[in-house]
Image (tube, rainbow over all chains, first blue to last red; front, top):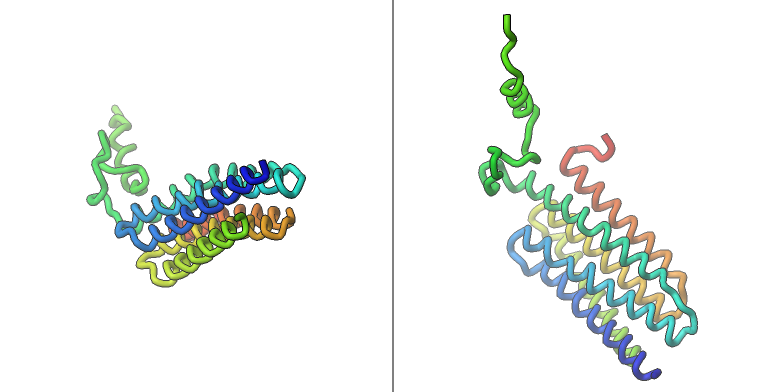
Length: 133
Length: 89
């Protein structure tokens, strides 16, 4: 039983290390900025997740105390990773792309994040019917 | 077995942090710098938890939690500053 736990902890640690290094290597290696956004997600989920699972297993099997608050870090990272990714993507949209380089916006002529106060004025002028005498 | 696996994981995450530092220095655009800094925070959390496991204490858990929170807040603040020129409007 001891050997099984030892094997499990070692396997989690090795997996976590490999995924951590793959995430950071992808950050250097990938060419496109939006592809680079994809690489560190591996380090966030599988890298840190593997280390935390190994830590929980190690505490339960060898240190004789049960700790589950490592799950809090995992939960926190899972909650915040999409928000940071969204913000970084938005920085990219506003610094590298213009209205013309973006893909088609369906029924509208541009995406809402590129909206300016002039556009809003124009739309409200179109929508309100002309005043009748 | 656990000792060698932990050494391997330490080496991997340390190397990953060095690569992130390289990316922070040489990144072509500020969005890449934000992303590299965010990944550095992630690797720092993993290193903290690993160190706590190696020493067999629970002290480093709190440090890892605080680093996770600081990482989120600083990434959002940096991106917001680039987007709007202001953090709290």
